[in-house]
Length: 235
Image (cartoon, rainbow, N blue to C red; front, side, top):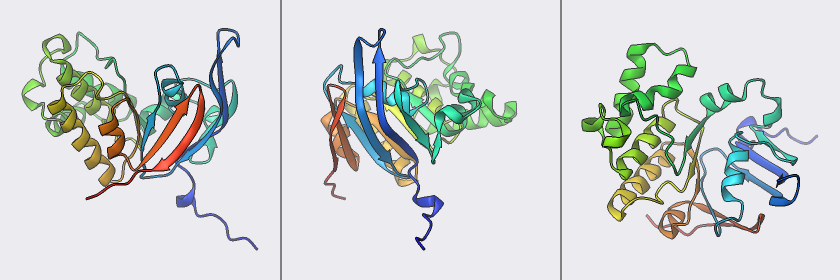
């Protein structure tokens, strides 16, 4: 008999022959894309603007559905999850290029937002938010609203918010695209640390320095996956 595959060997997330059409089928963003990402991997997704990177990220994160094909999380089709919002809140962390912070809330309050989907009490939410802001170096900005923060500070708040519920998978869309080199390096180091602690990361990026920090690079071109290669890393 064939030995059953252990549960821990199952891919964390998997795309199976995924295609995504828009505008009544006239625009094809993704064409027959298949890939797997295992627990604990650190993966960069690269390619020219308009090649389908953000579309693929949204599909893998359950923010959109494929036209054909399927997305699976730990072997289960995302279409079978009864409450997609609860699934995303409990399993995934998102870092968007445009941050999506709530302007009327402080940094600390923004970080707490995903925790309202959990059973955490008020004191625990505040403690967790302060812990995460400290990790991204923003303890002194906890009571500031987004308009009072620099671009780099807003991105760090967005990252802290993405980590609020200890996600299994962190998905980030151009997380250093608007940052200066010093701030970008601090984000690089944070992602390195998160991966070393066991978190799975998938980052869409145009930044070759960030892509090189990953352990594997996927390349999209005109909606097709044309390369899947390990990165050479030292140290």
